[in-house]
Image 1 (cartoon, rainbow, N blue to C red):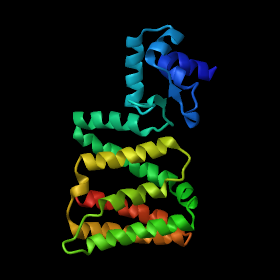
Image 2 (image 1 turned 60 degrees about the horizontal axis):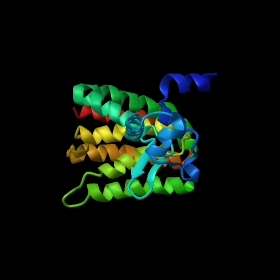
Image 3 (image 1 turned 180 degrees about the vertical axis):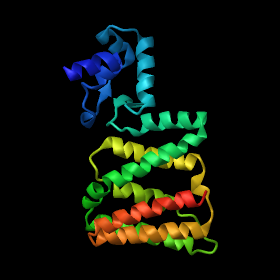
Length: 224
């Protein structure tokens, strides 16, 4: 009953068709002229529906491979929506950043507990790489490592909505220019927290890691 309501209220003919395909088996969509005959709707309407689906990452269209269904990800849809919102009012970034903080805090214990020794080593390597950049002459801002570290901690959660929201946050972080903030003393403080957070994860002391996570978020407010 619920599935049928979703089909009827929110999905187009094209997206309903996509649900019948298995992306693991190629997920190939026939030519729109062929699909038009199968579904009984115009090619023009199908093309509009296909483009809408492509914009939110449900399909990809390439010259040689044609149209194919993609595995689901929340990122394209939320990124497009948030980008529009921030273009309308950049001050809304604070609200999105606050949402990201609450997401990371809420999922901290679940996410950190899923990480294994290999994951711990990867997090440590990101901390080490960041410190090399910060201590270089001239120093460099380790933004890529910053993004990777935060996303990697939550990478094993089986929740595409959490993943999509967190990834969209870092895309918007870059779009509003926070990744070029060049106070090296500030970045060193941030990465000292990161070092201690990773140490807590490796030691299995997730309560300490959670406390450090909450404390280090205050640095963003202090630099304003």
